[in-house]
Length: 115
Length: 115
Image (cartoon, rainbow over all chains, first blue to last red):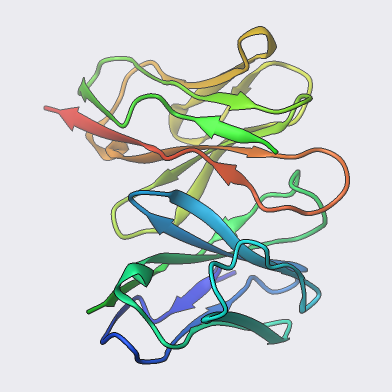
């Protein structure tokens, strides 16, 4: 399996622009997670999906952030409008089954820089 | 809610020397415990996990970790480090029971290997 695939790997944009990050989970995995990594706050869970349905979005920082999973093989995280403080590495992860006992597999991340 | 503390932000070890990375957690019961490694520009890779049973768990790349309930710790060890072990190491906690909540990560420990 190719693993979790994220695109783009790097994104540089200007403040106020819309940013869309993409994730393809491992085939057959029912859970998809979006994390954000910053120096100050470390790795934080933003939102996760089960069978394409958002389950918990309490980690989404503001209404400027939105995430969708239109099908089992694709998810997007959108920031509109973007701000410099959104600069971070965004990771997508997927797991096979229910519960944190199941291993989460991470993508390589998208490094976002908002100027 | 669970939390994870990795007290050492940076650790420098000579190649061939032994390594111990500290991890303390806070949780009302015995959690699921994980160690992940992140190489530069890469996503997180699972090193090992503890769910139950033997408190000394073996992982990939020669790493092991020991769960100590009395100390709420899950320290990572390796008897002899290699230059390729230079990376960021994350300890993570997963809640038992219902729900598929995302993992709670520590802030990470940056491992530097001296020749």
